[in-house]
Image (cartoon, rainbow, N blue to C red; front, side):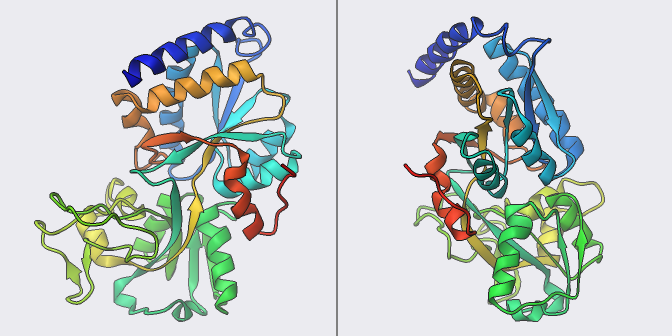
Length: 337
């Protein structure tokens, strides 16, 4: 029943957008959908193209995907937009975009990953290094993706400052997965990137994992310093899973045995689908409805949930107030409501 109603909504709103297609959403005046280089740029580019084609087909709109060279470039794309840009900004990017466009740019959908509308940053370390606290990272080489990344840099940096940690140097990898690869190759002492709640083993009926619990619950037996046996083990779906998909990096089990989670920073509101100031509302509504339908379809789910894309498993409707707490935490203003 829900799918039928959603299909009707997509069709109805898409028809409403047709009248505006001459102004926006044609080859002469395409919608630009910008994507951050969060994980592996080549995977994001290929996946984004397929998603954009599906949304374009559902709405009758002509949309051009663009994977931005870095996080700052995506922010600039929103600032320079003339009502024709939409995007998938990270939490920190969206917070800055909203302020720098005087809250003209606005969020419509938040990412949901495996039932969670929040995420966090994880500090990944080699188990052999024997680190037991964040203070052990003083003077060490920090690997991260980009200064504009919420989980890769912004929140870890604040956490290090609060705990008096001064690193000895940095390696900028350009992507979350690249950070883990660099750590596995010994190019630094630790890396930061997105964290994901562990999934329980099959048949588990206990309480749901929540932030503050062990990020390796059901995966790593800390008492015996070993993986839980397969029959008791849950699923690791964080940055280590993404790295295991890269040829030559080893199996997921081998990576988990080498790399652990020292600490987490968060929780953070998830990234989003946002539209630039002046974006036509009827066209916007058509795209929002189409994205909801697409990610909830088997074909769409497979694309959005790719571990080397953004690992979205669903979306939820939001507005700009979803990010009020985050803006306040990093010292940015909130709009008067």
